[in-house]
Image (cartoon, rainbow, N blue to C red; front, side, top):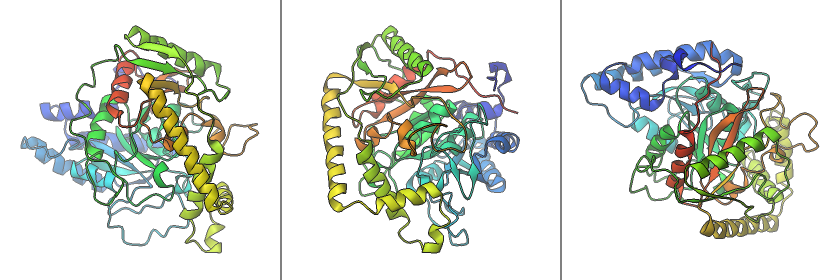
Length: 472
Protein backbone atom coordinates (compact mmCIF):
# COMPACT_ATOMS: atom_id res chain seq x y z
CA UNK A 1 0.00 0.00 0.00
CA UNK A 2 1.13 3.56 -0.60
CA UNK A 3 2.27 5.82 2.22
CA UNK A 4 0.16 8.80 3.15
CA UNK A 5 1.43 12.27 2.29
CA UNK A 6 1.77 14.62 5.30
CA UNK A 7 -0.85 16.96 3.77
CA UNK A 8 -3.38 14.14 3.91
CA UNK A 9 -3.30 13.89 7.72
CA UNK A 10 -6.62 14.22 9.47
CA UNK A 11 -7.64 14.34 13.12
CA UNK A 12 -7.38 10.53 13.29
CA UNK A 13 -3.70 10.79 12.33
CA UNK A 14 -2.72 13.16 15.15
CA UNK A 15 -0.50 11.83 17.91
CA UNK A 16 -1.58 11.84 21.54
CA UNK A 17 0.74 14.75 22.27
CA UNK A 18 -0.67 16.71 19.33
CA UNK A 19 -4.21 16.01 20.54
CA UNK A 20 -3.42 17.16 24.07
CA UNK A 21 -1.85 20.36 22.76
CA UNK A 22 -4.90 21.00 20.56
CA UNK A 23 -7.26 20.42 23.49
CA UNK A 24 -5.28 22.86 25.62
CA UNK A 25 -5.37 25.49 22.86
CA UNK A 26 -9.10 25.04 22.32
CA UNK A 27 -8.51 24.02 18.71
CA UNK A 28 -10.01 20.54 19.03
CA UNK A 29 -12.20 18.65 21.46
CA UNK A 30 -11.93 15.08 22.75
CA UNK A 31 -15.33 14.41 21.19
CA UNK A 32 -14.01 15.35 17.76
CA UNK A 33 -10.91 13.19 18.25
CA UNK A 34 -12.94 10.22 19.44
CA UNK A 35 -15.41 10.54 16.59
CA UNK A 36 -12.48 10.65 14.15
CA UNK A 37 -11.01 7.48 15.64
CA UNK A 38 -14.37 5.72 15.46
CA UNK A 39 -14.83 6.76 11.82
CA UNK A 40 -11.37 5.46 11.02
CA UNK A 41 -12.24 2.15 12.70
CA UNK A 42 -15.42 1.89 10.65
CA UNK A 43 -13.51 2.63 7.44
CA UNK A 44 -10.26 0.75 7.96
CA UNK A 45 -10.90 -2.12 10.35
CA UNK A 46 -12.84 -4.38 7.96
CA UNK A 47 -9.61 -4.84 5.98
CA UNK A 48 -7.40 -5.72 8.96
CA UNK A 49 -9.57 -7.00 11.86
CA UNK A 50 -7.69 -5.09 14.57
CA UNK A 51 -10.65 -4.72 16.94
CA UNK A 52 -12.73 -7.45 18.52
CA UNK A 53 -14.90 -4.98 20.46
CA UNK A 54 -15.78 -1.36 19.75
CA UNK A 55 -17.92 0.53 22.26
CA UNK A 56 -18.75 3.80 20.51
CA UNK A 57 -21.41 4.90 22.98
CA UNK A 58 -19.19 4.50 26.03
CA UNK A 59 -16.27 6.16 24.23
CA UNK A 60 -18.36 9.18 23.28
CA UNK A 61 -19.65 9.45 26.84
CA UNK A 62 -16.07 9.48 28.15
CA UNK A 63 -15.07 12.02 25.50
CA UNK A 64 -17.95 14.34 26.41
CA UNK A 65 -16.93 14.25 30.07
CA UNK A 66 -13.37 15.04 29.01
CA UNK A 67 -14.56 17.87 26.79
CA UNK A 68 -16.32 19.50 29.75
CA UNK A 69 -13.15 19.28 31.85
CA UNK A 70 -11.05 20.88 29.11
CA UNK A 71 -13.64 23.63 28.60
CA UNK A 72 -13.41 24.41 32.33
CA UNK A 73 -9.63 24.44 32.07
CA UNK A 74 -9.50 21.50 34.47
CA UNK A 75 -8.21 18.42 32.61
CA UNK A 76 -7.83 15.47 34.96
CA UNK A 77 -4.99 13.12 34.18
CA UNK A 78 -2.17 13.12 31.67
CA UNK A 79 -4.14 11.43 28.88
CA UNK A 80 -7.48 13.17 29.35
CA UNK A 81 -9.53 12.66 26.21
CA UNK A 82 -7.00 10.65 24.16
CA UNK A 83 -8.55 7.69 22.28
CA UNK A 84 -6.91 4.45 23.41
CA UNK A 85 -7.33 0.73 22.76
CA UNK A 86 -6.92 -2.20 25.15
CA UNK A 87 -5.59 -5.60 24.08
CA UNK A 88 -8.16 -8.29 24.81
CA UNK A 89 -5.86 -9.90 27.36
CA UNK A 90 -6.31 -7.18 29.99
CA UNK A 91 -9.24 -7.33 32.37
CA UNK A 92 -11.46 -4.30 31.73
CA UNK A 93 -14.46 -3.25 33.76
CA UNK A 94 -17.74 -3.43 31.78
CA UNK A 95 -16.14 -5.30 28.85
CA UNK A 96 -15.59 -9.05 28.42
CA UNK A 97 -11.99 -10.24 28.24
CA UNK A 98 -12.21 -13.27 25.96
CA UNK A 99 -8.48 -13.63 25.16
CA UNK A 100 -9.25 -14.82 21.65
CA UNK A 101 -10.68 -18.04 23.05
CA UNK A 102 -13.94 -19.91 22.58
CA UNK A 103 -13.39 -21.40 26.05
CA UNK A 104 -14.06 -18.13 27.91
CA UNK A 105 -17.65 -17.45 28.91
CA UNK A 106 -18.54 -13.87 27.92
CA UNK A 107 -21.68 -13.95 30.08
CA UNK A 108 -20.14 -13.24 33.46
CA UNK A 109 -19.50 -10.19 35.60
CA UNK A 110 -16.63 -8.04 34.36
CA UNK A 111 -15.90 -5.76 37.28
CA UNK A 112 -12.11 -5.49 37.41
CA UNK A 113 -9.49 -3.39 35.63
CA UNK A 114 -6.00 -4.77 35.18
CA UNK A 115 -3.32 -2.36 36.50
CA UNK A 116 -2.54 -0.89 33.07
CA UNK A 117 -6.23 -0.36 32.35
CA UNK A 118 -6.76 1.17 35.79
CA UNK A 119 -3.91 3.62 35.24
CA UNK A 120 -5.22 4.63 31.82
CA UNK A 121 -8.70 5.07 33.26
CA UNK A 122 -7.34 7.14 36.15
CA UNK A 123 -5.72 9.46 33.62
CA UNK A 124 -8.99 9.67 31.66
CA UNK A 125 -7.92 8.09 28.41
CA UNK A 126 -10.97 7.41 26.23
CA UNK A 127 -11.43 3.66 25.72
CA UNK A 128 -12.67 2.99 22.20
CA UNK A 129 -12.46 -0.81 22.30
CA UNK A 130 -10.44 -3.99 22.68
CA UNK A 131 -7.92 -5.29 20.15
CA UNK A 132 -7.45 -8.78 18.81
CA UNK A 133 -5.00 -11.37 20.07
CA UNK A 134 -4.16 -14.96 19.24
CA UNK A 135 -5.72 -17.33 21.73
CA UNK A 136 -4.26 -16.63 25.19
CA UNK A 137 -1.56 -14.54 23.45
CA UNK A 138 0.45 -17.67 22.76
CA UNK A 139 2.21 -16.90 19.46
CA UNK A 140 3.94 -14.26 17.34
CA UNK A 141 1.10 -13.75 14.86
CA UNK A 142 -2.49 -12.72 15.49
CA UNK A 143 -5.25 -15.14 14.57
CA UNK A 144 -7.59 -17.16 16.72
CA UNK A 145 -10.51 -19.57 16.42
CA UNK A 146 -12.73 -16.92 18.01
CA UNK A 147 -11.69 -13.71 16.27
CA UNK A 148 -10.13 -14.77 12.97
CA UNK A 149 -7.05 -13.32 11.27
CA UNK A 150 -5.60 -9.87 11.91
CA UNK A 151 -3.90 -8.48 8.82
CA UNK A 152 -1.09 -6.06 8.13
CA UNK A 153 -2.14 -2.44 7.49
CA UNK A 154 0.56 -2.04 4.83
CA UNK A 155 -0.50 -5.17 2.92
CA UNK A 156 -3.57 -7.09 4.13
CA UNK A 157 -2.29 -10.31 2.57
CA UNK A 158 0.50 -10.24 5.21
CA UNK A 159 0.44 -10.83 8.95
CA UNK A 160 0.35 -7.98 11.44
CA UNK A 161 2.56 -10.04 13.77
CA UNK A 162 1.60 -10.85 17.30
CA UNK A 163 0.54 -11.39 19.81
CA UNK A 164 -0.42 -7.71 20.07
CA UNK A 165 -1.16 -7.57 16.35
CA UNK A 166 -4.55 -5.92 16.70
CA UNK A 167 -3.06 -3.14 18.81
CA UNK A 168 -0.25 -2.53 16.33
CA UNK A 169 -2.58 -2.40 13.33
CA UNK A 170 -4.91 -0.05 15.18
CA UNK A 171 -2.15 2.43 15.98
CA UNK A 172 -0.65 2.25 12.48
CA UNK A 173 -3.99 3.08 10.88
CA UNK A 174 -5.00 5.87 13.25
CA UNK A 175 -7.74 3.82 14.89
CA UNK A 176 -6.75 5.46 18.24
CA UNK A 177 -3.21 6.78 18.74
CA UNK A 178 -2.43 4.82 21.91
CA UNK A 179 -2.66 1.11 22.69
CA UNK A 180 -1.62 -1.20 25.49
CA UNK A 181 -0.34 -4.68 24.64
CA UNK A 182 1.45 -7.57 26.28
CA UNK A 183 4.90 -9.03 25.58
CA UNK A 184 6.02 -12.46 26.79
CA UNK A 185 8.44 -13.22 23.96
CA UNK A 186 8.22 -10.20 21.68
CA UNK A 187 4.50 -9.60 21.51
CA UNK A 188 4.55 -5.81 21.39
CA UNK A 189 7.83 -5.54 19.47
CA UNK A 190 7.12 -8.09 16.71
CA UNK A 191 3.86 -6.51 15.50
CA UNK A 192 5.32 -3.03 15.97
CA UNK A 193 8.12 -3.99 13.58
CA UNK A 194 5.71 -5.48 11.04
CA UNK A 195 3.27 -2.54 11.25
CA UNK A 196 5.73 0.34 11.47
CA UNK A 197 5.04 1.73 14.96
CA UNK A 198 6.87 2.18 18.27
CA UNK A 199 6.49 -0.35 21.09
CA UNK A 200 8.39 -0.77 24.34
CA UNK A 201 8.93 -3.78 26.55
CA UNK A 202 10.16 -2.01 29.66
CA UNK A 203 12.28 -3.53 32.40
CA UNK A 204 10.33 -6.34 34.06
CA UNK A 205 8.25 -4.94 36.92
CA UNK A 206 8.29 -1.38 35.61
CA UNK A 207 4.63 -1.76 34.57
CA UNK A 208 2.55 -3.62 37.17
CA UNK A 209 0.68 -6.66 35.92
CA UNK A 210 -2.38 -8.52 37.27
CA UNK A 211 -3.57 -11.24 37.23
CA UNK A 212 -0.19 -12.94 37.39
CA UNK A 213 0.62 -14.45 34.02
CA UNK A 214 0.89 -18.24 33.66
CA UNK A 215 4.07 -17.42 31.73
CA UNK A 216 5.53 -16.03 34.94
CA UNK A 217 8.17 -13.32 34.82
CA UNK A 218 8.51 -13.55 31.05
CA UNK A 219 5.29 -11.56 30.70
CA UNK A 220 5.24 -7.79 30.40
CA UNK A 221 2.70 -5.11 29.53
CA UNK A 222 3.85 -2.47 27.08
CA UNK A 223 2.81 0.81 25.44
CA UNK A 224 2.28 0.83 21.66
CA UNK A 225 2.20 4.20 19.93
CA UNK A 226 3.17 6.12 16.83
CA UNK A 227 6.08 8.02 18.38
CA UNK A 228 8.69 7.67 21.11
CA UNK A 229 7.39 10.74 22.93
CA UNK A 230 3.96 9.13 23.25
CA UNK A 231 5.62 5.96 24.50
CA UNK A 232 7.45 7.88 27.23
CA UNK A 233 4.22 9.63 28.21
CA UNK A 234 2.36 6.33 28.42
CA UNK A 235 5.18 4.76 30.45
CA UNK A 236 4.86 7.56 33.00
CA UNK A 237 1.20 6.63 33.41
CA UNK A 238 1.63 2.85 33.33
CA UNK A 239 4.51 2.84 35.83
CA UNK A 240 2.32 4.01 38.68
CA UNK A 241 2.17 1.40 41.46
CA UNK A 242 -0.43 -1.31 41.97
CA UNK A 243 -0.44 -3.43 45.12
CA UNK A 244 -1.77 -6.48 43.24
CA UNK A 245 1.62 -7.08 41.58
CA UNK A 246 4.07 -8.32 44.20
CA UNK A 247 6.97 -8.11 41.73
CA UNK A 248 6.39 -4.51 40.59
CA UNK A 249 9.21 -2.01 40.92
CA UNK A 250 8.94 1.20 42.87
CA UNK A 251 7.57 4.00 40.69
CA UNK A 252 10.22 6.11 38.98
CA UNK A 253 11.26 9.34 40.67
CA UNK A 254 11.26 11.38 37.45
CA UNK A 255 9.26 11.50 34.24
CA UNK A 256 10.44 9.48 31.26
CA UNK A 257 9.90 12.66 29.24
CA UNK A 258 12.72 14.35 31.18
CA UNK A 259 15.87 14.33 29.07
CA UNK A 260 14.13 12.50 26.24
CA UNK A 261 15.65 14.84 23.66
CA UNK A 262 19.17 14.90 25.10
CA UNK A 263 20.60 12.65 22.39
CA UNK A 264 23.16 9.86 22.35
CA UNK A 265 26.47 11.68 22.06
CA UNK A 266 29.17 9.74 23.87
CA UNK A 267 27.17 6.55 24.35
CA UNK A 268 28.88 3.27 23.48
CA UNK A 269 26.54 1.28 21.29
CA UNK A 270 26.97 -2.26 19.96
CA UNK A 271 25.31 -3.51 16.79
CA UNK A 272 24.73 -7.21 16.17
CA UNK A 273 22.85 -8.39 13.11
CA UNK A 274 22.24 -11.90 14.45
CA UNK A 275 23.29 -11.95 18.15
CA UNK A 276 25.93 -14.46 17.05
CA UNK A 277 23.26 -17.11 16.45
CA UNK A 278 23.90 -17.31 12.70
CA UNK A 279 20.23 -16.60 12.02
CA UNK A 280 19.68 -15.65 8.36
CA UNK A 281 18.59 -12.02 8.12
CA UNK A 282 16.77 -10.64 5.09
CA UNK A 283 19.27 -8.48 3.15
CA UNK A 284 16.97 -5.44 3.19
CA UNK A 285 16.56 -5.75 6.95
CA UNK A 286 20.32 -6.08 7.42
CA UNK A 287 21.00 -3.01 5.29
CA UNK A 288 18.44 -0.95 7.21
CA UNK A 289 19.89 -1.90 10.61
CA UNK A 290 23.43 -1.20 9.40
CA UNK A 291 22.31 2.19 8.11
CA UNK A 292 20.69 2.90 11.49
CA UNK A 293 24.01 2.18 13.20
CA UNK A 294 25.69 4.74 10.94
CA UNK A 295 23.01 7.23 11.93
CA UNK A 296 23.89 6.73 15.58
CA UNK A 297 27.54 7.40 14.73
CA UNK A 298 26.50 10.62 13.01
CA UNK A 299 24.59 11.53 16.17
CA UNK A 300 27.81 11.26 18.19
CA UNK A 301 27.65 7.74 19.60
CA UNK A 302 30.57 5.32 19.47
CA UNK A 303 29.27 2.31 17.56
CA UNK A 304 30.97 -1.08 17.26
CA UNK A 305 29.84 -4.25 15.54
CA UNK A 306 30.07 -6.94 18.21
CA UNK A 307 28.00 -9.92 19.32
CA UNK A 308 27.08 -10.16 23.00
CA UNK A 309 28.51 -13.67 23.34
CA UNK A 310 25.30 -15.56 24.07
CA UNK A 311 23.84 -18.71 22.57
CA UNK A 312 20.28 -19.08 21.35
CA UNK A 313 18.19 -20.01 24.43
CA UNK A 314 15.20 -21.16 22.35
CA UNK A 315 14.89 -24.64 23.84
CA UNK A 316 14.95 -23.25 27.37
CA UNK A 317 12.46 -20.57 26.36
CA UNK A 318 10.22 -23.34 25.03
CA UNK A 319 10.30 -25.09 28.40
CA UNK A 320 9.22 -21.90 30.16
CA UNK A 321 6.70 -20.87 27.50
CA UNK A 322 5.10 -24.24 26.81
CA UNK A 323 4.86 -25.04 30.52
CA UNK A 324 3.16 -21.67 31.00
CA UNK A 325 0.73 -22.46 28.20
CA UNK A 326 -0.11 -25.77 29.85
CA UNK A 327 -0.74 -23.95 33.11
CA UNK A 328 -3.06 -21.48 31.36
CA UNK A 329 -5.45 -24.24 30.24
CA UNK A 330 -5.27 -26.61 33.20
CA UNK A 331 -8.81 -25.70 34.25
CA UNK A 332 -10.37 -26.66 30.91
CA UNK A 333 -12.40 -29.82 30.34
CA UNK A 334 -11.33 -32.24 27.58
CA UNK A 335 -14.21 -30.94 25.49
CA UNK A 336 -13.03 -27.34 25.90
CA UNK A 337 -9.49 -28.28 24.96
CA UNK A 338 -10.77 -29.47 21.61
CA UNK A 339 -11.91 -25.88 20.95
CA UNK A 340 -8.37 -24.51 21.27
CA UNK A 341 -6.16 -23.29 18.46
CA UNK A 342 -4.47 -26.54 17.31
CA UNK A 343 -1.01 -25.03 17.74
CA UNK A 344 -1.80 -23.94 21.28
CA UNK A 345 -3.21 -27.36 22.06
CA UNK A 346 0.02 -28.92 20.79
CA UNK A 347 2.38 -26.79 22.89
CA UNK A 348 0.20 -27.36 25.97
CA UNK A 349 0.63 -31.10 25.54
CA UNK A 350 4.37 -30.60 25.16
CA UNK A 351 4.43 -28.38 28.24
CA UNK A 352 3.04 -31.21 30.33
CA UNK A 353 6.02 -33.42 29.45
CA UNK A 354 8.58 -31.25 31.24
CA UNK A 355 9.81 -32.11 34.71
CA UNK A 356 10.55 -29.74 37.56
CA UNK A 357 14.22 -30.36 36.82
CA UNK A 358 13.68 -29.26 33.20
CA UNK A 359 12.05 -26.06 34.41
CA UNK A 360 14.85 -25.35 36.88
CA UNK A 361 17.46 -26.00 34.20
CA UNK A 362 15.72 -23.53 31.89
CA UNK A 363 15.63 -21.03 34.75
CA UNK A 364 19.36 -21.56 35.28
CA UNK A 365 20.00 -20.87 31.59
CA UNK A 366 17.96 -17.72 31.99
CA UNK A 367 20.05 -16.57 34.94
CA UNK A 368 23.30 -17.20 33.09
CA UNK A 369 21.97 -15.31 30.09
CA UNK A 370 21.08 -12.38 32.32
CA UNK A 371 24.54 -12.41 33.90
CA UNK A 372 26.19 -12.42 30.48
CA UNK A 373 24.11 -9.49 29.28
CA UNK A 374 24.78 -7.62 32.51
CA UNK A 375 28.51 -8.00 31.90
CA UNK A 376 28.10 -6.95 28.26
CA UNK A 377 26.40 -3.73 29.29
CA UNK A 378 29.33 -2.85 31.51
CA UNK A 379 31.05 -2.02 28.23
CA UNK A 380 28.15 -1.06 25.97
CA UNK A 381 25.31 1.24 26.95
CA UNK A 382 22.97 -0.16 24.31
CA UNK A 383 22.66 -2.97 21.79
CA UNK A 384 21.11 -2.62 18.33
CA UNK A 385 19.60 -5.59 16.50
CA UNK A 386 16.85 -6.19 13.98
CA UNK A 387 13.60 -6.59 15.85
CA UNK A 388 12.60 -9.37 13.45
CA UNK A 389 14.96 -10.78 10.78
CA UNK A 390 12.31 -10.82 8.06
CA UNK A 391 9.49 -8.60 6.78
CA UNK A 392 5.88 -9.58 7.40
CA UNK A 393 4.88 -12.83 5.70
CA UNK A 394 1.60 -14.40 4.64
CA UNK A 395 -1.33 -13.82 7.00
CA UNK A 396 -2.89 -16.82 8.72
CA UNK A 397 0.36 -18.75 9.16
CA UNK A 398 2.45 -19.24 12.30
CA UNK A 399 5.69 -19.38 10.32
CA UNK A 400 6.68 -18.21 6.81
CA UNK A 401 5.76 -20.53 3.93
CA UNK A 402 8.31 -23.29 3.48
CA UNK A 403 9.76 -22.92 6.99
CA UNK A 404 11.26 -26.19 8.30
CA UNK A 405 10.29 -25.16 11.84
CA UNK A 406 6.68 -25.25 13.06
CA UNK A 407 6.83 -22.69 15.88
CA UNK A 408 6.89 -18.88 15.86
CA UNK A 409 10.11 -18.78 17.85
CA UNK A 410 12.00 -19.92 14.75
CA UNK A 411 11.69 -16.45 13.19
CA UNK A 412 11.79 -14.27 16.35
CA UNK A 413 15.28 -15.01 17.75
CA UNK A 414 15.96 -11.39 18.68
CA UNK A 415 12.97 -10.77 20.93
CA UNK A 416 12.42 -13.67 23.38
CA UNK A 417 15.99 -13.65 24.83
CA UNK A 418 15.30 -10.23 26.35
CA UNK A 419 12.12 -11.42 28.01
CA UNK A 420 14.31 -14.03 29.67
CA UNK A 421 16.77 -11.35 30.83
CA UNK A 422 14.04 -8.82 31.73
CA UNK A 423 15.85 -6.02 29.89
CA UNK A 424 14.13 -3.01 28.32
CA UNK A 425 13.83 -3.27 24.53
CA UNK A 426 12.06 -0.96 22.10
CA UNK A 427 11.07 -1.27 18.46
CA UNK A 428 11.38 1.88 16.39
CA UNK A 429 10.56 2.03 12.66
CA UNK A 430 13.64 1.77 10.47
CA UNK A 431 12.37 2.34 6.93
CA UNK A 432 10.55 0.02 4.55
CA UNK A 433 11.47 -2.73 2.12
CA UNK A 434 11.19 -2.23 -1.63
CA UNK A 435 7.79 -3.96 -1.30
CA UNK A 436 6.70 -1.23 1.10
CA UNK A 437 6.77 -3.35 4.27
CA UNK A 438 8.09 -1.84 7.50
CA UNK A 439 11.42 -2.80 9.05
CA UNK A 440 11.98 -2.56 12.81
CA UNK A 441 15.12 -1.58 14.72
CA UNK A 442 15.40 -2.99 18.24
CA UNK A 443 17.29 -0.99 20.86
CA UNK A 444 18.12 -2.93 24.02
CA UNK A 445 19.51 -1.61 27.29
CA UNK A 446 20.50 -3.06 30.66
CA UNK A 447 17.81 -3.59 33.27
CA UNK A 448 16.44 -0.31 34.64
CA UNK A 449 17.85 1.71 31.70
CA UNK A 450 14.40 2.38 30.24
CA UNK A 451 15.04 6.12 30.02
CA UNK A 452 18.27 5.58 28.10
CA UNK A 453 16.54 3.23 25.65
CA UNK A 454 13.81 5.80 25.09
CA UNK A 455 16.37 8.56 24.65
CA UNK A 456 18.22 6.62 21.96
CA UNK A 457 14.99 5.70 20.19
CA UNK A 458 13.93 9.34 20.22
CA UNK A 459 17.28 10.49 18.81
CA UNK A 460 17.03 8.00 15.95
CA UNK A 461 13.35 8.71 15.32
CA UNK A 462 14.09 12.40 14.79
CA UNK A 463 16.30 11.53 11.81
CA UNK A 464 13.62 9.51 10.05
CA UNK A 465 10.42 10.45 8.23
CA UNK A 466 7.31 8.97 9.79
CA UNK A 467 5.76 6.68 7.21
CA UNK A 468 2.10 5.71 7.47
CA UNK A 469 0.10 3.10 5.58
CA UNK A 470 -2.60 4.27 3.24
CA UNK A 471 -5.99 4.66 4.92
CA UNK A 472 -9.44 4.71 3.34
